[in-house]
Image (cartoon, rainbow over all chains, first blue to last red; front, side):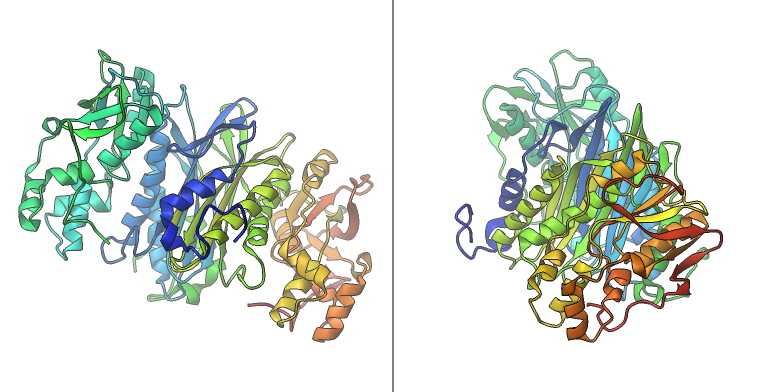
Length: 320
Length: 320
């Protein structure tokens, strides 16, 4: 305990929580002149002598972000890469390279690691990115630390540029993976299409640049949950956002899972965060790029509402 | 088990070993046109529209790469950053940014994490680098995943350029940190100067660029052990290297620890890998940059010798 500590004496990681720690941890770091954009967005931007490099790091921990009995190593690799590639997509950029750090238990099948590599390579190939380095060491559990580098052909789209009057638009599947995860969490394996949506997300990798070129004012990829991530735009931009339920079609598999689990299937859509679609804001009247559809509106104020009311969040199907 | 597996059916991570896995894992990844230098050196080089970005990732796992009772969080942070900054130094480059991924046990003191952050920030400040992003999540043990970005003002120095006739030269302290670690491993806390050398290495951050400008043909930072890392240059360059014991002064603290532990103190110098000095090769007759001293010679052939003989490696003081 030092005098400068913001925490109670003896506070643990569990007491403070990850979000509290992330805020304090990040706040310890001064950003030098080479930093165009520091922590807090989907990725950071570091100045190079003649441009910027986009960089983002994400960790996946076994038992917390994936389970080996819920997805094969290949699919875990696809998801690990997708999650990071999607962060660059959400800046309007294009990923060029990944590094992969792994901690591995001694008794893990060696083949699992190679299948993981194949999954990472396959996903990276979708955007032409290469795996250029990394590190492997023993550990008590599988941890996958992926860092992605990328670049922006046009000005990067931050979370902070949404303006009152903007349209909120979505590109990509939303809610399917969360429903698939809920299915797995109950010990089921079907509907297969939802389980596969969880095991292998399909982020719209061309949509980020298209949105940037079309004049998107703010953008984020959905990884914490649709309403939660729209909330990040609302906070960063200092605006209020309303999301419209009517913008979403509840496809038959979602309805089936909702019935089976006794959940409102709309909650997979509003609360799910495993599909990695993009959410962006555009000035009213913008011709939305291919694949984007309006799902809400930005106004003066603060916070996120769904059909004008505060959204209480999903219940009954959360995993882990 | 797929038909393409290079491993025996049922082989585990322990059976194959990290080095076997790293080779196979890295071999799964094709390197695209944007990759100037892929895995296998101190860092990778990714082409940007008008240059290159240097990138390297290292993991530190509690109980394997550090122990909380052997170094405080601040010093663990210094070491974690130093290890990565040194990789860029070994390319002849300069670090600009770091990302930090952390897995943290729930019962870890929150203050430990902030002290870690302060240590990382202090070390990064030595070269003007900023911590621009990262991720924090729960895990069963502390894992610190650091990725460093950097740039090269002059052509990067790889491991592969050493030529017969070159001089082998070292810049920085070598062997002190290994001796300090050996002391800690026996439950002692002195000589204090060696323990501190372990807890807070002092890589020669200005020496990499100076070596590159002076015409270094190959370079590496010592992190696996002096002879082991010189071996990486020998393999990558297709040459033989002889290291001279006479080039090293065995300072009094090293001699004291050798006596106390019943070890040849020269083995800390030849086998130690915790100080992060630079080893580089230069064409004969090169005026060595400030801080470098000749410690050996390059010739045609293969492998590393010490005073003309195969070096069997240290014994009796290895940690963990």
